[in-house]
Length: 340
Image (cartoon, rainbow, N blue to C red; front, side):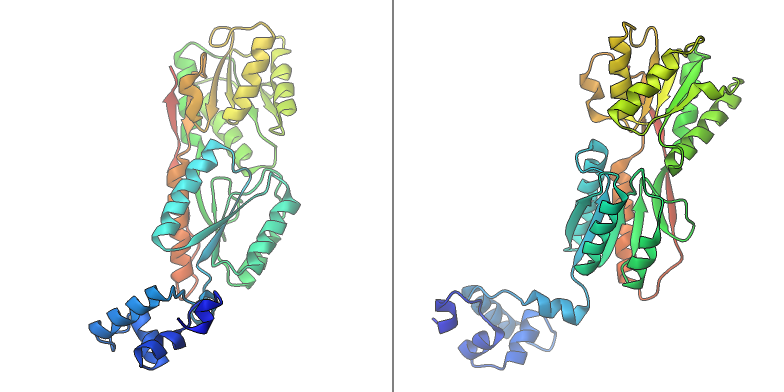
């Protein structure tokens, strides 16, 4: 065997060419399936390449094609079932394209979020899929990535900017269904535990909540809308604020299922009966609700898998596009799923 192989070094195109007594350029074209090389020669080259454990020089391929065949995914938390479903579909799309996915979680820290993006930029990923954190307000990183020729597609939690590509779920339709369900069950004192005030998703939930009340002929009461920073402590404080009202609400729409888990725990600790003294509907359709006693009355499905799949497909369109197309805004309709 060649000396370089004895030393454990990877085989080169020149070594394959020497073994077959053909030119290195012929070997290169054969390995890349060039039509100018006959089938017999191509098969001979591939067989010897396999025998010598030849591996293509990825750096050279990347340089030639100006691609690294990697995409980055930045999201608040990898542990949430919602994002797990999205990631599965993203990786399926990436695998079909023969791409590798590099993931990072911001943990809702804008500085950490920015560092992840800078790292992805330094590694020359071909594109980025991103769900912004709850504390993200500075979108200067968009220009940073675009100046490097790296397209971004936002999904789920997206910035309220017309100039970006977005894939999200319409939160209004699910909220209207939730209010309708509560009213059909005889509830008229319906409250909202919302997320941080400036978060686009919080703004959309509040607007939909008010519209749902108006649609059912119910008055809007400012004290029935409380905000949480989405921490367990913030969630507990939010429900305690509602429970302390003289005219306590009998029904609550919560920002998401994790908020619902925290506030339902607090309600039980206060000696109140779930689905009797107070009822809940939450966002995101937590997969484990079906295994739990006294789950919320319903949960609002936001289709994370579909969002991830669509966002990934859009990103690959942008990566392969010769010219940057106009921004795309794709919206899925949320849907109420009964847990009863």
